[in-house]
Length: 125
Figure 1 (cartoon, rainbow, N blue to C red):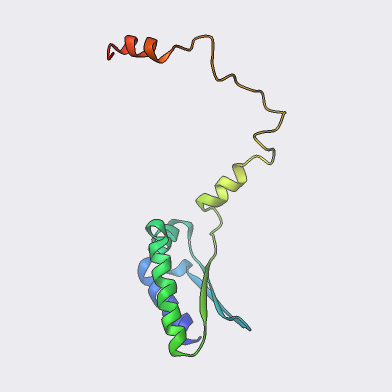
Figure 2: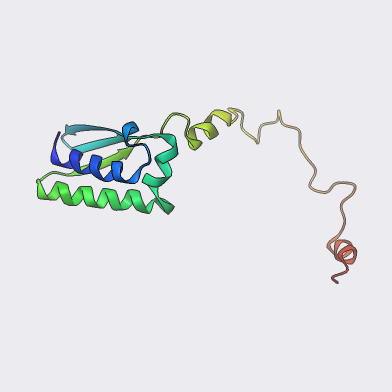
């Protein structure tokens, strides 16, 4: 195991609740080093962080470790099986919502009220 992979393992296992589910893989090609990370679905949010800030910070630190070793290091975070995004993909319909197979719903229904009528009902206006 190389220094960059050891560093990634150390940081990620310190962040997650289930360190035994953390797996890293290291590949080297002409573009540099690619570290691939897999973890449990429950720990994914801890690794990504709010607006991806934790993942960005980890990537920045890995680049610093790579510069010290004269290599370019990138991190790929694999989505876990049973994660939220995979559930969304499974439930997504392959048919376009704009397809003619869906019934059209009128924007104005027979029970629609004007804004003035609705405001009068609320006694705000």
